[in-house]
Structures are given as C-alpha cells and as structure tokens.
Image (cartoon, rainbow, N blue to C red; front, side):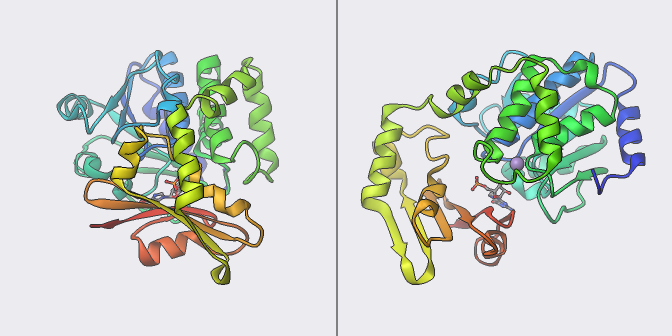
Length: 319
Ligand code: 5GP
Ligand code: MN
C-alpha cells in the first residue's frame, strides 16, 4: 500500500479495537463483483471480529452474486430506504468500499454525507475525492478486494478471515481482472491469491456460480445484441451496443444480465474502444472499455459525467 500512511492503518485499527462497533459497509450503486465481493469479504471479517455489521447497497446487486449471502445481511437502500436509513443513523462507523466519489452512491449520497461518525474509504480507482475521514486509496491494485485483504492483514484482523470471506475477496479479484486476464501484472496480486487459497476456496465452483449461472433469456439477449445491435465504426476502431428498456423487458432482464457485454466488441480485430448504453428510468447508463493507452475514463468524464480507470470506465446521461 504505497499511498497509505501507517498512521491511517493504526487509526483505523484503533477505531475497531473496542468491540462491538456497529458498522455499515457501503459499495457503489449498481455494484459489480468487486464492489459486492470486497464489501462482503470485509463485512464477514468484521463480524467474525465481534462487531455488528450490515452491508447497505445503494440499489440492487446482480443475481449472479446472490450466493454471497447468509453471513452478513445486505440491505438494499432503494428498496428498503427506511430500514437502511435507521441502520445507518445508528452506526458508529462506515466503510466505503470500491468507490472514491460520493456521487457513485446515487440517492444514498445525502445520507452518507450527513453521517456523523468516521468514514473509511478502501478503494482502487484513480483520483479520490475527500468525502471520507480516512482514505485508503491505492489505484495500482487490481481490485478493491485485493486491497481489502492487505488492509485486513495490516490492521491485524487476519485471524478473522474464514472461507466465506476469502471466497468473497477471491470473487472480487476474479471479476475485476476478467478472470485473471487484465490488471494482473503486479506480484502482490499472486501473493494475496496464494494467501486466500489457504482457506480452501473452491475456485471452480466460484467460477461456475459467477459465470455459468445465467438464464437462457440472458444468452438470447446477448445473441440479439451481437446480431442486431452492435455497431462497428472501423475508422474510429470502436464498437458499441445500446439497449432500450423495452428490449430488456422483452428478454426478462434481471440485474447482472448485461454484465460483460461491453467487453465483447474488444475481441474484434483492430477495435480498441467499446461502449454499452443501457436505458434506465430517466437516464442512460454508459459503460466503456478500452485497450492500450486510449483513456476510457477521460472520455467518460468529458462526455458522460463519469470516470473510472484508464481501460474501464462508466458514466451516465440524463434523459
Ligand atoms: P461498469 O462499466 O462495469 O459499470 O464500470 C466500470 C468502471 O467504471 C467502474 O469500476 C468504475 O470505476 C467506473 N464507473 C462506472 N460507472 C461510473 C459512474 O457513473 N461514474 C464514475 N465516476 N465512474 C464510473
Ligand atoms: Mn473494483
């Protein structure tokens, strides 16, 4: 952790040295495998350390992550706003995981902003904003899950890692690296993976649960996208796909169904930039992926009020 002072780690570990502390772990809205994996892994470890913990997700999370449950409750802020607000108001502290800008939490931002207790950020995106009291921001990490593991060890909570927590962190790393195909060139990643493997993770079953757990409708939606909706702009070395709410409805869309679609045009020869546009209620969610030095994040911040990493970014546009 190059950017994190020892004082921050010492302060965070001190905040949690008096058990039990009442904690909320917050992922970003439209959480992906890393947001849920890193939040769930951290939450299980904190629970094992004797604290009271819930995850409060700004909105629904993908069904392919449903199996990450049972150890810690995940409250959906959008669906159970009153319960979520009540819990947040009664908490002693908050972990903000896998995001570095409060706007990434959508309608939950005001509640997070007004929270009186300490807020701790654990994140791997570039350009952190300063909405947390303690900022653990390490953009060279593959995933927040890899970083959560190092934070847990540095804080002295290693004895509280169990198989469920290790599997959740492994899921975060696996999904944010496209099954170990990008952001995989740092030695630390393999060190963390080998430590996680000591908890007897069933890696084949995790892969199956995440990638082979979709409906037939989802595959048909993918086929429709590729056949009817994929536009290739060879002169711009770009491919993009757009989907309306009606199209999603026709294929019985559930959250998570379009996960991975944005990567598909990048498998075409000479395409280095791809985009996916999904119509939501009142806005369009945009996802961007690039290869090499083309900056998906500045494209997104310039045109879609978004941001992210060099090669993976997102944003939105109001309708
Ligand atoms: P995805 O395309 O999977 O939704 O997001 C890819 C990455 O883009 C995320 O890990 C995050 O870094 C970034 N990202 C996605 N949506 C937004 C957004 O609305 N605002 C910002 N600042 N970043 C986003
Ligand atoms: Mn991430």
